[in-house]
Amino acid sequence: MKRPCKFDKYKLGKNVPSDKTCRVVESELKGSTKWLDHLLWKIAQPQTLDIETTYSILAQLKPSISNLFFYKDPKPPFAAYRTHHSIEKILLKLDRDSSWDALVACLGLIQEAKYLNTVGVLFFTSRPTLRIFLRIASSYPMRFIAKDFFQYLKKYFLPNEVDKDIDNILENVNIEGNIHYYNVMTLFIEDLYILKKSLFAPTACLYFTDKYFNTHDVLQEVFTFKYNHDWKSVRKHPTVKKLTRAIRRWENSKEYDSSNLS
Amino acid sequence: MTLSRKPGHPTNSQIDSFRARIWYIMVEIRLQLMTAYAVEKHFYPIVSITLETRV
Picture (cartoon, rainbow over the protein chains, first blue to last red):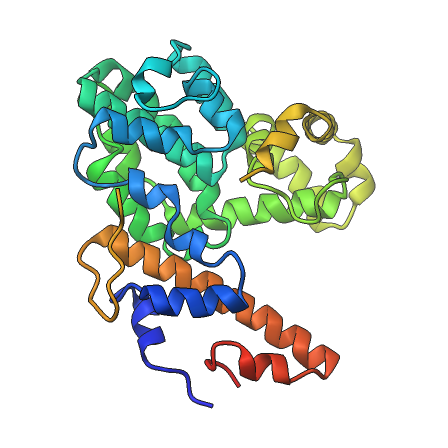
C-alpha cells in the first residue's frame, strides 16, 4: 500500500494536516493531535502577544508551572491573578523542570516582558530559556526540528539589548554537539540504573547532570571509567554519588510527580 | 487564539511548519512502534488499518 504524498508535505512542514486527517490519525494514534495544538506554537508567535492571550496560555500549563504565575484557579481576566513571585524564583523552578511546559513558560515570560516593555526581565530570561531549550532539543520529538527552531528563537526571542554577551553565546551554540552531549548524558543516567519510576531519563535529569558535571576534569574522570567499563569506579566517584542522591531525592519529591503531568 | 489548519493549504508561517513537522514525527514514530509490535505479534491487520500509510 502506498502512502499518500500529502504526508511528505507534512514531513517537510509545507502543509498543515487538515481537521479530517487529524481526526483519522487521532482515532488510531491517540494523543497525536495534542502535538499539533501544543501551547508552544501559540506562545512562540513572532509578534508580541497581548497580555491576556499570554496569560491565558500560561494558565493552561501544568499546575506546578502555572502556580508560579497565578494564584489558585485563575479565570479571565488572568492579569488579576498574576503572582508577584520573583523572576529568579520562577526561572529556577523552570530550569529544574526543563520540560516543554517550562519552555512555554519561559517564552511566556519573554512575551510578557515585551508587552510590558520590562527590559530588565529579558536580561534574566534569555539564558535560562536557551538552557531549557538545549535540554529539550536532545529529546524526541524536538531534536528533529531543533536546528531550525533554534534559529527561530535566536531571531525572535533570545536576543536582548541588556545582556551584551548573549549575541556572542548564541553565535557559538553548536546544536548538534549539544544534542550529542545530552544524549550521552541521558544514556549515562539510564545505564546507572538509578531511576526507579521511569524507564527513560526525563529531560529534568539533565538539569542535575549540568549541575554536577560542571568541570571538564570531572567529566573526563567519570567517562574514562565508563569507557573502560569500570562501573564500580563510576558509581564510587564522588560526583556520581552526589548526582545519584540528587536524582533519587528528586524522584521521591512532589516535584517529580508534578513534572509528569504534562 | 486559533491556529490555522486548512485542508491541503500550504503553511503560512514558520510556526505552522514546525507544528506540521512535529506532528508528522510523532505519527511516524508511533507508526513504526506499532509496526514493530504488529510484526512481533504476527498481527498484521492493525498495520493495514492504521492510516493506510504503511505496509
